[in-house]
Image 1 (tube, rainbow, N blue to C red):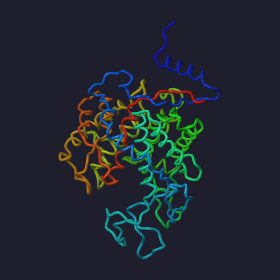
Image 2 (cartoon, rainbow, N blue to C red):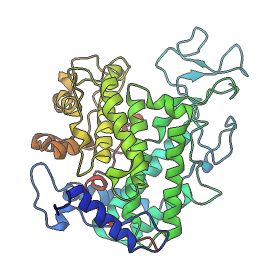
Image 3 (tube, one colour):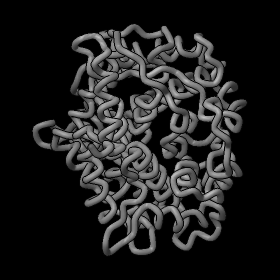
Length: 437
């Protein structure tokens, strides 16, 4: 009898492990574990010691968070929200009340009747939920990274408290949908459906999903709470993948489409059963990325043409690159690397990375118009460089990642929200599976 293939062997091993679980248990959860250096693996130029590089930053950011509240969306309610206090709500910052019709639908800036020219943000737009999502997500990621570094229960406990408030406690949990995101005030819901632009506002939830496995065995969350978190993200995945607005975001040929892909991949991976290479949701997303995303977004030289026509082409290009790199990382398995997908008649991620690296290293070499705002504050430390350097065995990418300074807390929020990964440690450390009892 011939020896089984590696794929068959791994599948049989996974089935054997599953048989040892309590009847009815299908999903493997994860326990905190030290980064790869703790497993005795030698460091290399393409695998820098992220725990050491970010150690001081992580702990300096985590300590003040122990005294912070969860800050859920229920703490911020707009009277224009047509939903409940648990429903996420936001308004487009480029729309204003119509001076000629105060009770009529808001109009876009640049409109003949608008009080501000195109490109000026409306101070009246409700963005508190958008900001709350970002703040919460980065806090959970930071607290979890501090727990991974130190093993101290206080960090895990605080992260668990925030997760509980946002996703489990009935009075404060967010509904797993964005049906009221980017709502144009005074517009009947029946006349104008929710807009796909709102989906990018929860892109930082992808890192929350990445953090949850590290907290599973900390003792800070019960088995039922862990299952509840998985259920919330499974529901959100379903919403993203079955609604019209989710489909619109998926089909965008820019960072909106990449945001949909990254979030869908993160939530699907969190809820994957058995081998991730066999998970139907992840397999569908791999097909989407390989056959549609690459063709729609990347030109022959590796640039993102649909980002270059915006008012912030440099920022949006870097944002898009980071999200696609993170999606590649989530979609790859030991049997198949999404990093290596290429079109027969065009480029893939390898070309996109190579195109952007010189302009990350030297923004002044950017051959396109500079961003309308905050061009000089960029690039910041781009997480895509770390992930790509590891995937392609390119030490110059990881060296550039190390050389760049992270964006400071004083950086304008619109720049911070364009860095989808706040704690790279959670993306390169390896949690280990444990049984769900």
